[in-house]
Image (cartoon, rainbow, N blue to C red):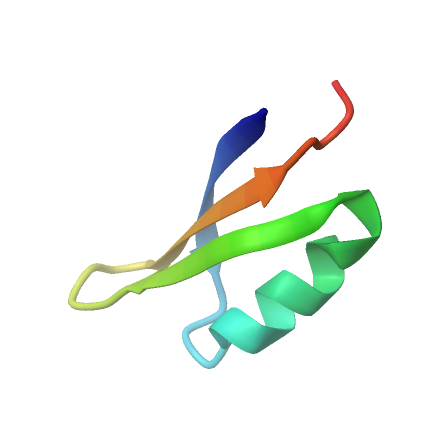
Length: 52
């Protein structure tokens, strides 16, 4: 089972690699998308088996 997390209001210089690395300890990261053109910076993270 995978879960999708919306992460908003991150610093504009944050990178997908940094966000993925931060959340690796909670489960395997399937996808981390950078949403550009919006303010503030947004990320969408899909991870496999994040505990509730």
